[in-house]
Amino acid sequence: MLDLQRQRSSIQNRDNARLVRSILIGHLIIGAGASGVFIFHERFSAALMTATWYLLSIGFIVGMCKFLQWCRVTLGLWFIAGAIVSMTYLAFLPPAPEETLTPPPLSIKLMPFWLSTVALGYVAGGLALLLSSRVQKATAKGFTLWDVSHNW
Image 1 (tube, rainbow, N blue to C red):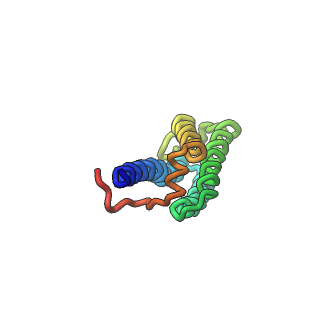
Image 2 (image 1 turned 180 degrees about the horizontal axis):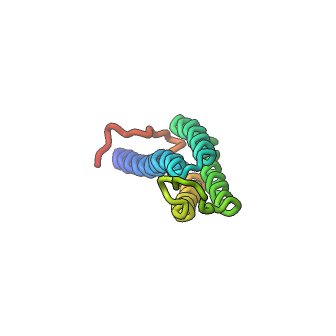
Image 3 (image 1 turned 90 degrees about the horizontal axis):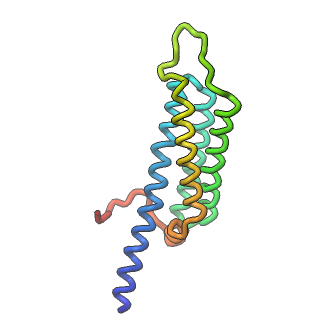
């Protein structure tokens, strides 16, 4: 009986860790991509701010992997704050067509679509980090970001 409980508990722990891994790996891909897309829009100050926000978030990810619950809460709030800042950027600095000889490699007209989509994704990820009991359990038990012994 205890062996069955231990097996069920380890399967649940693996599933919890898989959820957290998917959120964090998604952040690692999308966060770096957002900074790169700002460069293609030739919005270099926004790219620098996004890259700084992204690099600071990596420290919170490391803390989550080391069983620190406050890093989970801080990263969730960090995601939501990043989404709020990006939507504020869209609201107060609307991408206006620039009168230059060479237009940016990526049209400015695409920015409201992709940036609002990314912001909504970060709100969802932040709420999952803050409110999900599965994420809380995975952070409390510990996990690795790269599972080399995965059983698919």
